[in-house]
Image (cartoon, rainbow, N blue to C red; front, side):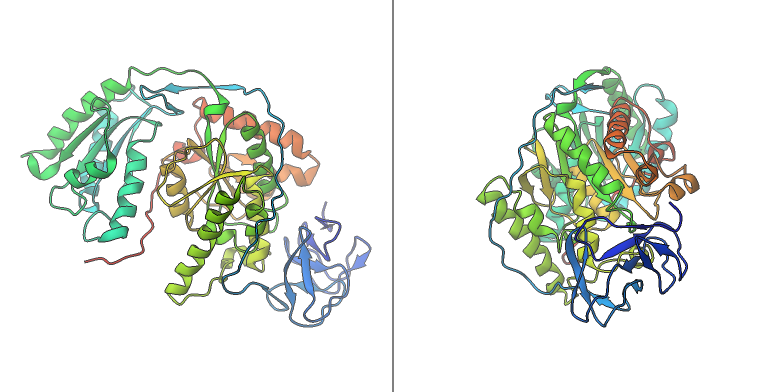
Length: 490
């Protein structure tokens, strides 16, 4: 496909360069007047100043000057159409996805009826002051108790003290989601003792737990906190060792949908592929979670009109406008996205990015809208409040109950969540360059593989990961968390 332009929708007035293309190249019946970098847009016709630029069949901005057929279109000659907080009207466009019989994976059935795809032991610090103690315990226990479970890990963070009100509440909700996550066969909640989020306060948010599965320790209460921690981890790893994999319906699977380091091919290959997977899983009774609210701006109406009822529509509107209000509160531009890396990959405006990003949600109806730190309750496609930042978004997806995350990328990133993070490249060059980062190549869609065949292969990959196959983030121990902060630090 070298020296080829790709037109995505019949009504588009731009096409995408498959590779770097030189001025004078002829493709789709036009002669390029300028060099077009890989992934960037070329005008398919003359476009007047102020006229909409159309991609994916929708406007992605407008021309800021006269653009001739064959010219390069990017930040120098186009601009977003978006501005301010909008009003929306519910115009339902619901889809009926025919149910499918669910296949199975090999997972862990928990005592409370939940299921996990890993049987790890997690150490959850209540406060950043205890981070290195948590790391030491994870390292020592990982050596001493190896083989009893799928691994012993901690997820450190700088919060839990000197926070007030809702800010501390967000920290507590995320940590609660991690403690209760079914990929952890057992959990040690590790506190210091004097922090705002001390174990006593955290228990009020955590609620009732199985005290065989979850144990608590405040380091200030013991002469030798490492010795005490190892005793508790001995008990917890023995408890976790009781669980064995058994066949479980794919209808029990919860998958987070995420993109990061997008390029112009994200909305052509990896994101629509993940959307196709989302449709298949939800047809089987499974659940998918779509977050990154700022990366819905400009395409939010497509999601709103798929809300199953007026209440879900109203909560989607609130989610969008509240996040815009957050930007305005700090006097920041709502539509500053896309990032420099996105722009280098050919994405010019937020509409363009959002129309690509939201394709990860497929075509299914939106069944629920979750606040930051909420846990998923309904099967089907859910919207989850959270920012676009990769680590924060991956963390909130995990805390909401995602067993794994499908993470599409056109630029590449080694980032991993506490749960298996399946990196899906939008192009084959990235897959070949970073095999230690990328788990699945959606770039084959540009090379003739059908979307249906690619979805079948991705589905099998998800089954394998759910059944124990390690992702690259797991092999390399890339397991990070970051918690959203919007408040006062004392």
